[in-house]
Image (tube, rainbow, N blue to C red; front, side, top):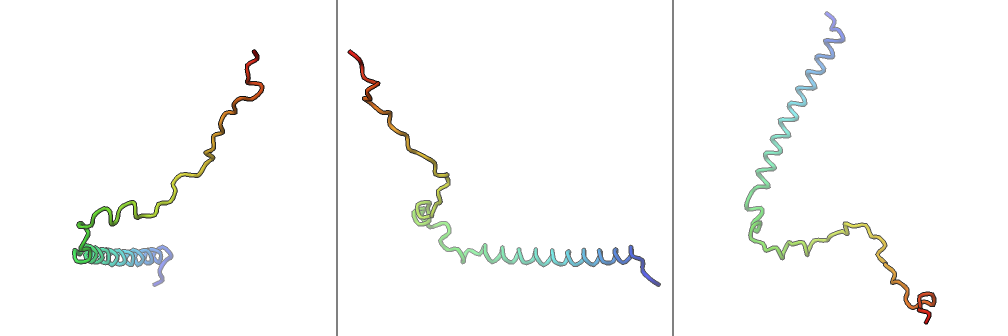
Length: 87
């Protein structure tokens, strides 16, 4: 008995969905294991006991968030001949 193209496609789709389901289960197990590992209090002993001076913004490198622009404002010229009073 020969399978039709539709039946072959259905079987292929079922195999792919089963594989994705198995992959999703393993990924979720891995995420749970990593959460258990990294939420361990022994790993972060000074998490709440470090003062802001040790890790504050003053010690972090900050890039200039603004685009440098032309800041020079020229002074108005004074005491030019055409500005003097004619008495």
